[in-house]
Each structure stands twice: as C-alpha cells, then as structure tokens.
Length: 345
Image 1 (cartoon, one colour):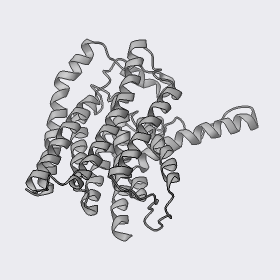
Image 2 (cartoon, rainbow, N blue to C red; image 1 turned 120 degrees about the vertical axis):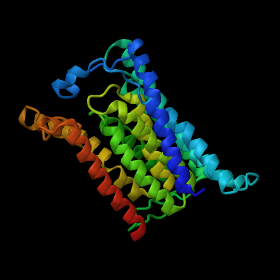
Image 3 (cartoon, helix red, strand yellow; image 1 turned 30 degrees about the vertical axis):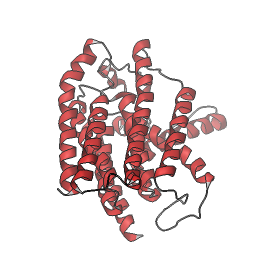
Image 4 (cartoon, helix red, strand yellow; image 1 turned 90 degrees about the vertical axis):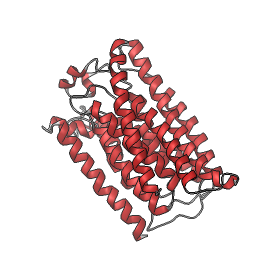
C-alpha cells in the first residue's frame, strides 16, 4: 500500500470522525451552555448575532487528527516493513509525537482560555501574561525534543541563503517565531470557516512538501489534520453552527508552526503561513500607527477599518464566504511558491 493511499485513507477517516463527532458535540455544547461570548469592539457589530454559538468545536478535529495520525503512521510502518527493533527507526515517530503533543498542549492552553471565558460569561479568558508563560514552557519542551530526535541543525534555511550554525541562539530565535505564528493563527479565527479553510490548504501544501523532503511519517499528521479541518468545516461554514474556539485555533497554530520547524525549511514556513502572518501584522501595524498618531496629533488614527485584516475586508463589504475564498486562494498561491522553493534551491 503506497504512502499516498495511506494518507488519503487517513484524511478520509479523520474527515468522517470530525464530521460525525459534531452530531454529538454541538448539541452537548448547547446543553451545557458553552456559548461564545461576543464583544462587538473586537469585530463588526453584526457579529453580535453570533452570541451564544457553541465554542470549543476544535475538539472535533483535535480528536480525529490525533487518532488517525497515529493509526496512519503505524499502518505506514507495518506496510513498509520498517525494522521496529532499530531504535533509530523510531526517531521519525518521536518527531511526529512531538508535533502531536505540542499541538495538543497548545490546544489545552486554548481550552483553559475558552473555559474561563464561558465560566465568567465574558470574552476575557487567560491574561496575556498567563498565555505567554504557558506557551513559552511548551515551546522550550518542543524545541528540546526535536533537537534530540529531529534535525539537530541550528542553521536558518531560507533556500537562497543558509545561515551559519547559530548554536543555542537558533532556539532563542525560534521561541518568538513559535509565539508569533501560533497566536497569528489564533487571530485568523474571526470569520466563519476562515481559519479551518486556510489551515486545510496549509496542510495539503505541507503534505506535498513532506513527500518531496522524504518526511513520510509527518505527512500522516498533515493529512489527518487536513481531513479533520474539512470535517469541522461542515459545522463552521457561514452561518456557523459551532466555533473552534481558542481550543481549536491554538491547536492549529501549534500544528502549522511545529510542522514547518520539523521540516527545517524556514522559507517554506514563511510562505505557507503568510496569511496568518499578515493577519497578525495588520494588528501590530494598526496599534503602532494609532499610538504614533495619537502622540503626534493628539488623536489616534487608523490605517485599516478594523483588525485583524479580515475584519477590514468585512467592513469594506466582503461577505464571509468571499473572505474565506480569497484568503484560501492566497494561501494556495504562496503555498505553491513554497513548493517551488524546495525545487529551486
């Protein structure tokens, strides 16, 4: 059985598990009143009608991804006769496990944040400081594991330029990269179907890249998550019957970031994650410009109508469907450039 067939079956099974689990999870979340609090200052005023929509739906693709990625991996090993008595042959499994556990831990941080919001009936969960501390701990552990069982290189690979070995400074530099990207994915979850669709595209691109780079075991995870995202989108397309919550978006953020770092192709990660990067960058630009103009002119001014930038498009008359399609197409275009960068360099 070829790897692509295993991956397709893995994705299909993940899709089914995620989609079917919504039949039970969504009514359950309604029953226990785990609805999303909405602050209109964080989005267009018409988002107020989404108040109370069940959150934490990210469990759909988290459960499906974890189960099917591990099952797909072991089928791949058994079908290809990989020597299970050779300890070195388990290094790819440890890397895969590191990605899964890292993603799950960030999902747990998101769950704590979601639960706090629901319990307080308010849109404020964990404080920024609490989130960052938890994220830092998880990031340190992840980098330690992939250094031990993965690519021990401490070079930054931009394709057209590869840095000299940076030693411990490489890991110091990667910490803010992890924090930025994971939270950037979190910020992308502001329009029905957006984060799930963009991540679905990212995981398909990563799957192709895994094949090119010979990271076959990791492709079991990327395809499992792609299928899980697709199954979740059944419940999340506009009008959403369920939100992924920080539980889901933090899991996705960690998954995208960890996959890119395990592949050790930093240019590829930047291109595949460009939509998320721009989402977070729009917030940074807006805040800095507002503070600058307030200090200079006495009143804060804005570049965008609202941030993250998907809200700017909403305020400019784009429907949620159009935003999802547009951002996904951008993800496809830059993802293809990422694939080409592997061939070019």
